[in-house]
Amino acid sequence: MKVTFIILSFLVLTFILVLAWCSYPWSLQKKVTKGELLRIETEGIVNNEEHPSVIKIQTWNLGFLFGEGSDGPLYSPKEKKFYEDKLNVLVSEITFSSPDIVCLQEIDIQSERSFNLNQAQVLARKANYPYIALAVGWESNYIPFPYWPLSRNFGRVKSGGAILSRYPITSQEVTLLQKPMSQPWWYNLFYPHRYFQKVEIDLGSKKISLINLHLEAYDKLDRQDQVRQLVEKIKQEKIDFVAGDFNMLPPSASKKSKFVTNKDEYENDSSYQEMVKSNLLEVIPDEIYALDEASYLTFPASRPERRLDYIFYQAGLKMIKAEILPSALSDHLPLKSTFQISNPNFNPYSQ
Image (cartoon, rainbow, N blue to C red; front, top):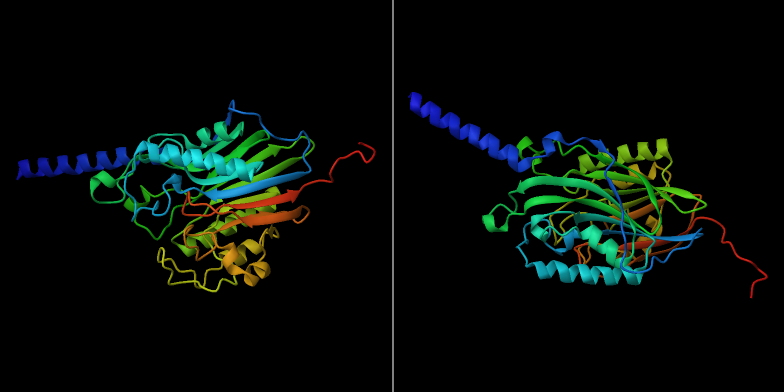
């Protein structure tokens, strides 16, 4: 009996130690951090104005460049060249769309599944964005997902959000949000944090505050609470722009359940209505979305059937253009918008 007890105790202790090691460092993770700010040397010339009157902002959930199925069920390991080639295409697409500020979600910073490439830093260097803000939303020594076979597991993961800018990012605050209370503790040990990534950007004659975010996808009550926290933050801190993957639908969405891709349902989800309370404007207002829904869907990229990605902005700014861009790189399509932030400076007597 004593030997059996010792063996069982050893097995239990081993299991606890393995679990702790795999999920580390979440047990020590602060809920609010400064994240990481980088200033890098780019491969080419940084194309920016000293005092811009117009800026372009783009948001994109990259799905760590795996593409559709990046959330697990259709995931299978790829060769390193797969990710290197995708990064090169990403550089070309970002260069072509030419945003001044890029808000990215689900970008790998140092993950085994994407061969430990810092995707944000490679993109910034090659596409000529000297300023980077990194927000780690998911970091564990080993992620045992997808569950079986073990050869498909993600392994070590360090991933989250990134903001790339042509203009100096002077400060950052990253808020890691509560994981779904509806899930068991062992599930949440390996589940990513959703987050708000707030930065201040110096545009010369004007400074702006911007939040890049990724909200809860599978628990609408949790998502609604996250939006309420966001609205409170916007009201307290006067945020100019909020961009990212909200995982919510516009009120006039014609379909809110029984999707082909992922069996998510959005019936009785008030996330968008909660966001309206922020008094920020949305670049594709619901009344415009309702007129041509098919043109504004962002997920999944190959056969869009819902809109999950948004850019909100302060009413004092002028939105010039908003567009969903075509791409096959991720499971989401990118959203880009152009804003006039001040009156243009020009000399009417110049030649």
